[in-house]
Each structure stands twice: as structure tokens, then as C-alpha cells.
Image (cartoon, rainbow, N blue to C red; front, top):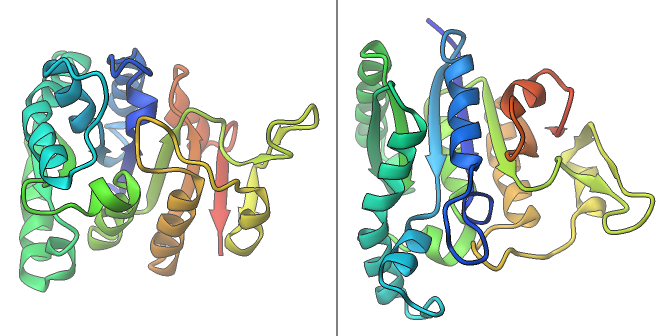
Length: 246
């Protein structure tokens, strides 16, 4: 059986400041397609609320959770359509889950079984939080923790958290800024600035928390750039991004 690779990409990486879809969709899809022969891959995606904001032609995101949930439900259709375009010629399947699903023995087993069948059909599962009944992603972490929980539930070998930066950066924002290729979970905090994106609810702190969850279960964790060609392949090969270890 092929090892499992979970790839997560967040809102700010997929959408511009105007909530417009970026070419990152196509680059991520191309990398997953290239790695599909080697891994059983799950794509965890954010961005549904951004698509909803665009479709409803809103000037800004509302603050009320119920309205954000409604926009997520509206935008989920467009988000999946954009992924379908990116994976041209390949079958994808939508998977909506909550974190609670991943902590329940029966639902976790059912998820693993259904994803295995999807892989046998040659399909790529595209996972998002079910915001209609859960607001964890809306409130807390732009699907970083969800991706970690999916990786743990599936016994994944790798979890790759894609961002708009080339992994963890030492001396971020200074002339001495440079990529940290390997860092421990304890050491990573000194390189992390508590800044969140304007488009999403994630950020480096959210990814570090997710890394801790995955590492505790034996999953290898990487953070890296999503917006260049061959990004996931380069991250797994240690040529870009950051590997976080215990």
C-alpha cells in the first residue's frame, strides 16, 4: 500500500487580496498529479468563505459566525469548481468533515475506508471543514489543525502545510532573512511572529500547533512555498521549505 501524503493549502495562499483565485491552484494540482504514483494523497483546502465573499460581491468579510458559515456554504461550490479545473483530466471528490468526526472511532474508520476506495478509483480527495455544522476553522486555524487531524487519522507519512513563504524564515523581514531547512518544535517558536493573514485565519502559530499534533503521532511535517512549480516535490526532497521535527 502506498504511503499517505496530506497536503494543506490555506486561504491567503489560494486567493489574492481581492479574494480572486490565484494560479496556485494549478501549481498545487500539478505537484499532486506528479506525486500521485508514489503516494495516496489527500488535499485539505481552505478558501470557501473567500469564494462566497466574491460571489456575493461583498466589500469585506462579515464578523458574525452564522454569516461566515453561510458564505462558506455558498463559496464551497466555486472552490471545488476551481480545484476541478486545476485537476483537469483527473477525478476529485469532495470530503466535508469536522474535527469531531476525526476523534470519533467509528466515523474516523469510515472516513479512512471511503478514502481508500477513492484512491482505488484514482481520485484525489479534497477535504474542507464542514462549516455548516462546525466553526472551528472559521474561528481558530484556517484548517491547519484539521489537516493535522486528518494526517493522524489516516496514519499519514507526511503532512505538508503550504504557505506563501518558503518555510520558516530566520530573521524574518530583515536583510539577514534566510530559510531554516530543519528545526525542532521547541526551536521553531523563536522564528515565528504572531501574525495572521488578512484573507485567512491561519498563520505561523497555527501551523506550529498543527505540527505538534502530527509529530506526536509520528507524522513527518513540512512547511513550504505553494506558489512555485514543483513546490511539493522540492519540499519533500529538502530543497525548499522547512522540516519540523520533535
